[in-house]
Length: 208
Image 1 (cartoon, helix red, strand yellow):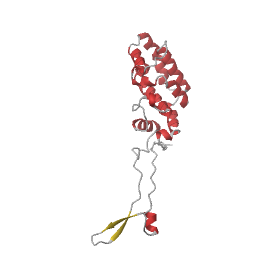
Image 2 (cartoon, rainbow, N blue to C red):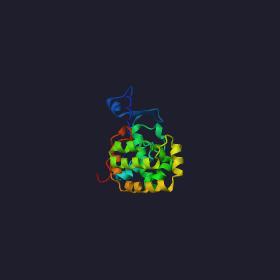
Image 3 (spheres, rainbow, N blue to C red):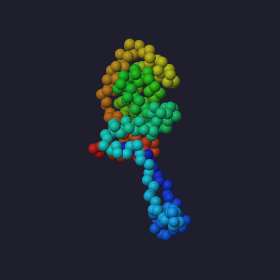
């Protein structure tokens, strides 16, 4: 599935004069050197080529990566709090998967991805990944026993000084996450496919 921007070609206005063929196909009037009027047939307007054109032989993961890098996805491009609900779901899941796979939950809470920590459990439940949501919920409680700070800066500040005890408790949760009780790729792919108003018109992935 490739996510393409929906394009609408504006209807071409009919010429004020000319025969039926001219009106149906469209012509351009020009004057040649001897003063004779010559009508050139206009080429029909074509929609602008999408940056995703020609990328049909891609699997779901590759297509989601391409989507994340496009202007249709707001992850890393717009403040999380200002994003629409579907964009928040995409951003939260994209960030937690990227960061936890790279450096565990400690890295997830320490980096800018902490912006979506307060929403990640809801996002995972929204796409149908309750067991992964439970892992993230337990990671939040483990890392912040006094409650998740409301400010992203405070989440990151606490994460930068996690004690060895906290880090040790997060380790098995990292391993649970790595076991992938749900296919986040499949679930997220299905979710964005259901929101073309946000992510564009889908095309089937390679092998579908």
